[in-house]
Structures are given as C-alpha cells and as structure tokens.
Image (tube, rainbow, N blue to C red; front, side, top):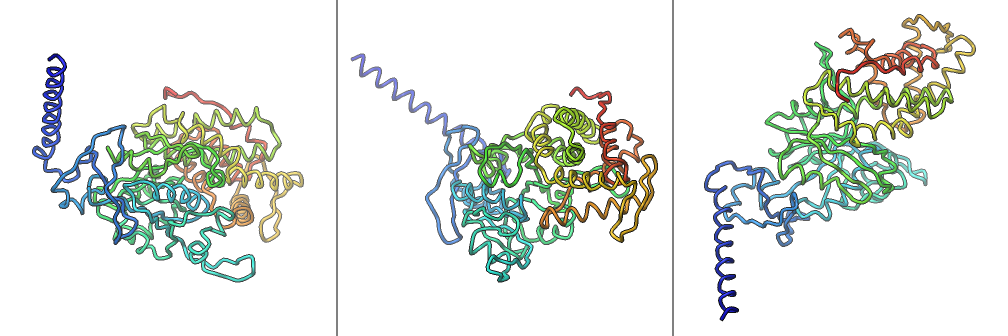
Length: 479
C-alpha cells in the first residue's frame, strides 16, 4: 500500500512540474512582442547548404539543458539568427593574410561541427597572382580552393575544405550573420559600403584588427570596432578578439588563449565565443570590456618596437622585463585616459599582459624593430645616416629634422618589404598616431616610453636612448 501511495505521489509531483514548465515557457511569448528574444535558448537547424537539412540539434548556452520549441517561429526568419529555429549563423572572414588564414583553420573546423552555424565559411581574398613551385602562376583563390592552402601568406598549413576563398566581396558577404574582420584597417573604409549592402540585416561583427583610428578633427583615438559599427549603421554591433596569438603557432595547433570582448547579449556572446573556441589548442574567454581589449591590442605593437630596439642592442632579459612592465602601465593609462568603462582585470587577460609578452618576444613588430636597430647602429658608428638616394645625413643625438624623418620612414618601408612578404606593420602607424594625440594633449611627459620609441623610430634618435624611456610615471588608475 505504501509503495502504491509513493508511486501516486511521484506521479502527481511529475504532473505539477510539467504544468509549471509549460506556464513558464508560455509567459515570455504572451508578454513580449520583441522578435529578437535574445535571452532565450532555442533549438537550431544545421544546414550544410541551402538544399540540405539535418535534424534539429540543440546548442547548449550557459550550461542550460532546457529545450524549447515555438510553433510560430517561422515569422522570425528575418530576425536574429541566434534566436530563430529556422535560421543559423553564416560566417564570412574578411581578409586572408597570415592571421586571417590562421583563424580560418579554427573557425572552419568549428563551423563544420557546431549545429547553429552553416558549415561553409566564406573567406574574402584579395585576388592576386602567385607563383607555384613548378614556376607556373595561378590566382590565389584558385590555389586555396584546390589545394586548401594559402601558399603565399600561410604556406605549409592546410585549411579546412569548408573554407572557401571568394574574390568578390559582395558574394563573400552575401547574407552573412557574422563578419570576422582581419585585415589592415587602412583599407576598411572603401570596403564597408559593399559589406553593408550584402550582409544579413541582423549581422554582427568581430574585429581581429590590432590598431586604432583617430578623429581627424580632435585627434582623439577611436576604436576600430566603433568605426565599423558607424559604417554599418542600423544598430550593428562589433566585438573584438584579441590575445597572445602568433598566427603561425595558432595554425600549428600550439596551445594558446584569446579574449573575446563583446556585448551582443545572451545567447549571442556565447554562440560567438564557440565559433572561435577550439580547446585544448585555442581557448577563448569572454569579457565585456571591448575598449580595454582593443586598445591593448593596438598599443602592445608600439611597445614591441621598443622591445626590438632592446634586442638590437643585445641587452638582456632584465631590460626587456622592465620595458614590458612600464609598457603595460602606459597601455593601462592610455586606455583609461581616453575611454570609459575600462576594467583593471582586462590587463590580466590574454588580450593584455599575455599579448604584450608574446608580441615583445616573437611578433613581427619586434622583429622589424630589431632589424631597424641593427642597421641604425651600424650607421651611428660612422656618425651618419643614409637615405635611399645614398645621401649621408649627420647624426645629431639632440636635434632632428625632416631629413632624419625621411630616412626613418624609408628604412621602415624597406624592412617591411624585405621581412614581411606582403604583410603590414601596425606598430609604426599606431606609434605615430598615438604620439600625435599625446603631443596635442600636452601629455608626452606622462608617457616617456611611447615618446622615446617614437623619437627613435621616426626622429633618428640613438637606439641606446631607449633605456631613458623605461621610467614608470605615477598612475591615478588602480592598476
């Protein structure tokens, strides 16, 4: 008798729970007309192409095991793909250089397995002719799509077969719901109208671009993610992915971390993180501090120039450690001086301290700065600098002029061409722009390291004066 009563009680409790869950499910749809419903976890349909369908699969968000269906969901086909049972993310990578191709290896694999994302990943490639080992010339897009390898910018690494190189930007962006920007930001403005006209209305973006824009009137720094948002309009949102991510190491599957900073809201933040996260080799943490993460990604390239000067002088680890410490403080001070809401914890993430360390030991900016320093040191011994025309200019450790600046500009350009195989330096451009901002604000004395790096890089000052910039100034910030 007790056993039967216990069974009956369990059945009653079970019915009560089912009724409660039914009511809890119906309330959001009865009380809200918001078609986005961004906080609700929904099932997704995985589509490998427009004519093929797989059974509904559920993507787990924030460890939720709930499963919901909405019989009226078909009206949401044109709304946010993260909240529609009939739609899923379509990813487009804008850029195919060294870092763009490296991130494509991870994104491609993830898109092939995640149920809320289309399998095919479009990668916009600036079309150019490349010479193959047999001496023949082919279009880069044809080589990538046939050999699944970017033979020019990431040779020796196989790309997933679902990553498709597309030379036409409009075609690459067609109905994309997630744009991954990974190219020199100087060329972005001329691309944005085409991107805006062809992507999905609910599209969002993630910028992997490490640099800053600057207002032509005020000279104040502007986040590139913000520039993208303004160009796209219509409430477009862009996050950033920054971290200690040397492209070649990422492509080889060596373990590293990265930081996704975004404010898309749930569940889109987590869905986006999953598109990049590829444990155990590529671990992505999420934060909301877009400004802090993005400015760190830009300024660390400036500090890396100083690290290259230190290496060119054959100074040891102690000197570089001191430079990194002061550099991190100046990065934090710059962030908080020009942007609101920057959090101290951001500088302890991969996008902060970790990215600074790896860039100052293995990045392209450090590499080119070391080459600049060694060439400069050889000429300093002779007391003259030589420009591309063979003219000799006297070295003056205390005064510079336009001739010194011209020599420095020519030297950076030549080193970039010789060492980077078509890639671009970001540190030199950001250094010049940050210097102009601080000069206009009368704040150069508060940033002695950035100031000194600029003097060496563009004013012809002696390389060994870099140690004069390794001075920690007081910080009002709590870091």
